[in-house]
Length: 255
Image 1: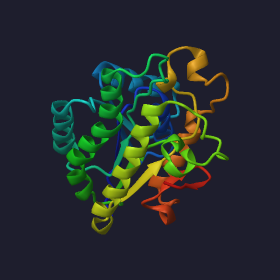
Image 2 (image 1 turned 30 degrees about the vertical axis):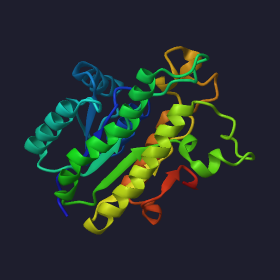
Image 3 (image 1 turned 135 degrees about the vertical axis):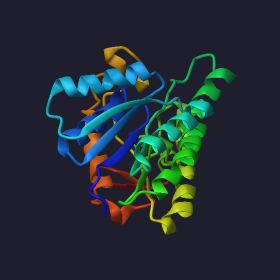
Image 4 (image 1 turned 90 degrees about the horizontal axis):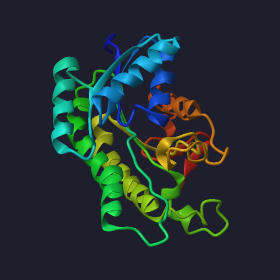
């Protein structure tokens, strides 16, 4: 195995779960080089500086511009990482958007934006970076940040806690993302890449909006670093028994 740093690319890493995961990884070990990706290079760089200024940084950090809705941006990021690193060890498809169900119904623009960001975007990112994962000299992982709200089995079960939750198009997008994970796992499992869908749980995030009430889910949301630790457990092999599945902190969700 190579003694070089484990390179980790996280999309949507300037806030929320992506940012917290970067914090967890670089504070855990000097073996990680975490690349924070954001639609805005300035926001990615700001994320790097925030982590460094907080201290307790053992690993390496860098920033890159990557808009998952822009094929040109995705290709440029893949070329840049190929040039600088030669390969990629961990891909975390984290970028996503959500919109609550509007009283007047969803507009076509909103539907397209959610599906483009949450489904088409991760598909394009995976296509662009899979070859770099295949060049890894370590144990490569491809993670897709999903949600329990995307589970068809849970959504259809009146006894399940997520049954009454709205967010219709967001839920549709995560169900589609889960199918992408199933397909990616079939394509890559015999090539040495371990693929997971990951539910981060209800944690503080700007996904729900910008107010404190939105971010904290009215106080119900937990620390996103807990999600980051779950992701760390996965990429360090502690969840390998569940490869190809829809995992969460305490187990596995049904598709």
